Length: 300
Ligand code: TA6
Image 1 (cartoon, rainbow, N blue to C red):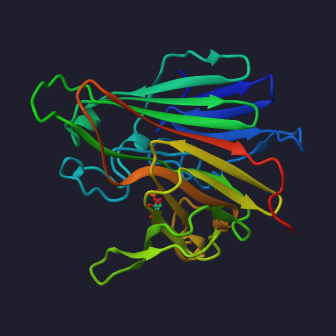
Image 2: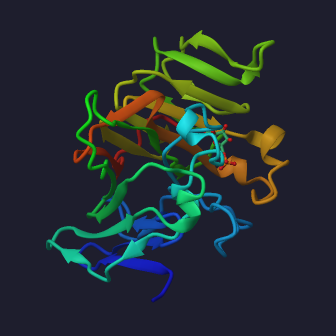
C-alpha cells in the first residue's frame, strides 16, 4: 500500500496529503472565496526528511504521549515529542465521502518498537476531514487496559498538533493570547527551565526567535497576516504553543531549508502543561479545525 494518502474534495477543489509515517498531514490545499485557485496552507521544509527516518519538518506532526523532552516516568525512554510522529500508522483504505466533506482515519496500536520504550496499552485513531475552506484533525486516545483496579489504571499523556502554518512570518500575528501565563523557552532560567511570563501583547508576532507555551488559553485562535490568515478552533486542547526558530535556531536545523523560518509560524494547540488522563476502556478526543480566514484582517 502507498505510504501517502491523497484526500481529495473534488466538489470544492480541495486536497490533503497524509503520510502513514507519523500520520503527518504534509499538504493541505484549498481555494478561498477571493481566489478559486487552491493554495497550499501548510509549510513543509524543502529539506524535510520524508523517508521515515525522522519526523517530517513541517505539515502537522502529531505529538503524543509527551510534548518536548519527556517528564513523566512512563515516558522516560521516549524521544522529544513522543513516538506518534515517528511511527507508521495503519489505514484500512477507506475514504468517507459525506458530500461536502471527505475524511480518512488512521490508527496506531503498540508495535514491538513502541512497546520496547513504552509499556502502556493504548489505541490511537487520527481522523483528518477536508471541507471547502477547512481541514480538521482529531486525535482519539483510548486506554485499552482491562484493569478493574481502584484507583483506576489511568493512561496519562500529553497531546498536541504541531501545525506549521504557511505565511510571511515577518507579518504574522497570533491572537488572542493577551493576559495569559506562558513559558518562554528562549529564555531559560539558571536551572535551565523556561521563564514564566504573562503575555502583554494584543497580537503576538514571531519576528524574533519565539518558543512560547501558553497555559489555559482560549482554544480558538487567529493566525493572520496582511492579506490572509488561518483560524484554529479547538476542543479539549487547553494550551497552545507559538514557535518560530528564526535564523537563530533555524539555521542550526539540518532539515530546515535556508530561510524557511520566514515562511511559517507554528501555532500548536495541545494539552502540554500537566497530563491528560483517561480511565480504562474510555477514550479522550482532542480536535482542531483549521479554516481559511476569508477577508484580509489588516491594512497593508
Ligand atoms: O513546539 C515547539 C518545540 O517544542 C520547540 O521547542 C522546538 O523543539 C520545536 O518544537 C521542534 O521540535 P523538533 O523535535 O520537531 O525539532
